[in-house]
Length: 123
Image (cartoon, rainbow, N blue to C red; front, side, top):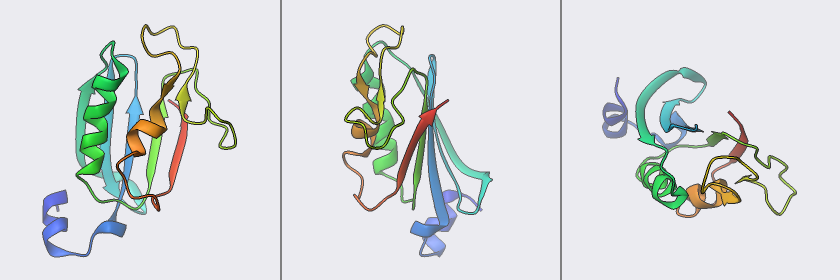
């Protein structure tokens, strides 16, 4: 079944988990079955531009228009994965032009429900 079929047939918020993988050339968004992440039901790819806001706003909009119970984000780095850090969720001193000190988690979760668990790590 596709994502749209699940959306129509079921109470589906807990049915899916979301994942985002940010790479130097593209950002990949995916929805997978909760409990079996190998069963991807939807996938989208966005080119990594030199402007983080341009790229991250596309990814954030994709996330905002889906329902899921948790979100995992992996990104090129270096990153700050320490939850207690004031720069948790940031790409830090990357050599990728324009992406230094980018708040990835903050931007991608700004318009999501606050009760969705989010984890951030390196790709």
